[in-house]
Image 1 (cartoon, rainbow, N blue to C red):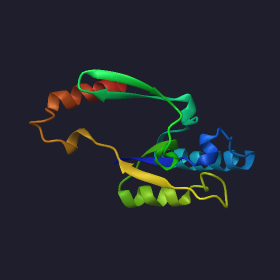
Image 2: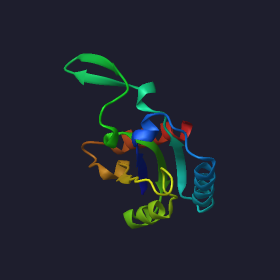
Image 3: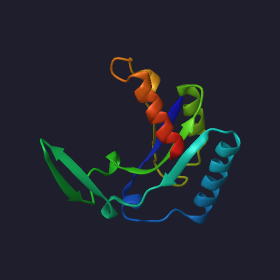
Image 4: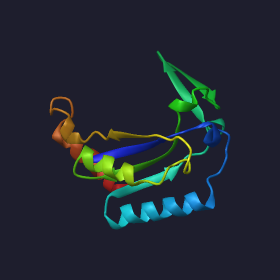
Length: 140
């Protein structure tokens, strides 16, 4: 089972405040622990939404909206993709994480399971489509 652990943004991350050296060191050790345990597939911090954009789809029209975006608590400051046996194991990894915004600052990690081909019935996602998607993932 794959899960995405999403670190929610805060006013400091949205203002472009960089993490402290101590936090970067602690996160590096945490990432190393997950890699050595064989659970971490990917993980990165994200720059402030002021450097980003959104593409809005409405009917056949696409509209580009440049950041920053207003609802800080709904934004993502970083993520990990992990592969574990259960949601409970994903929660345990999140609990072991250093405080993502630094000790003493409120923070939140949201955990969401990633869809797998097996989550879809064959009439929606045929086995040959799943195999083609897996081949593309392997190539990437």
